[in-house]
Image (cartoon, rainbow, N blue to C red; front, side, top):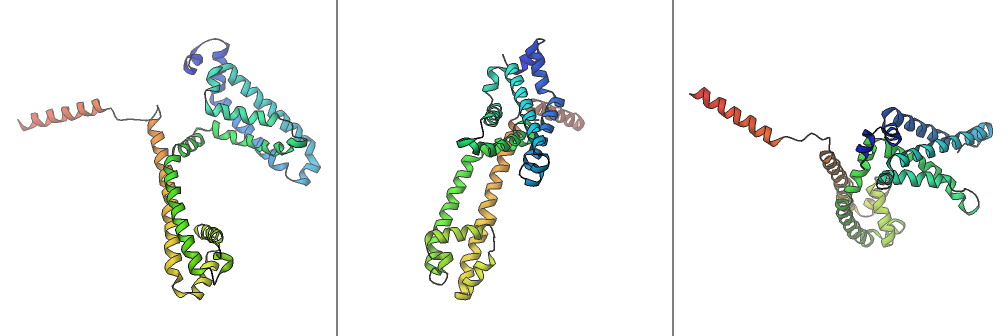
Length: 265
């Protein structure tokens, strides 16, 4: 039975499904997630924990119980359909991690409680669409990453040979050149890298400027282009997306042609 059929029913499962999918319920869950995000942030402050640490722990446990109840409601309403939805499985994994003991060897899991905030992605449709688009864009992004890797490797070999002697710390080895070129791509303190190189070799700008332009303004924008195209494609594929009715358009064109023919007579 599909989710639509369950929702249209009159039984307990149908009422549970309508409740889980209702806008007020979704807004309530979003609000609780945001409150939980604030409490998790406050727990990082020693001063706040010393003052109201006990209250924050109790509130955190209450919110976890509420999230668990909400998850149980969705499992009851959708049964097998819940476990066929990747976003529902993501919510399930986040709640399971939150319930795992955070002591001893598993104390690192305590820091993973903040993953509950990521449930906003599965609840807010716009965030979900962006993540789905990024995942759909991975094949295209792989080709761009390969291109970027080739640009970086060739540039690192050239930089090591050209500037390794004068700037051993930045370009003395291939690994150091790769790291420095990545720093240049992010434009982090790039002037303090390029300026000493140009002082040692006045024509160094002929190497650095094309690299910065290609890596920062061309290749990175290709990533943005692929993601934007993926978002648009997913939006067009959505069931609710408006698509032109070809038959209706052709009928209107024929009607216009008939009117024009009548006017000519």
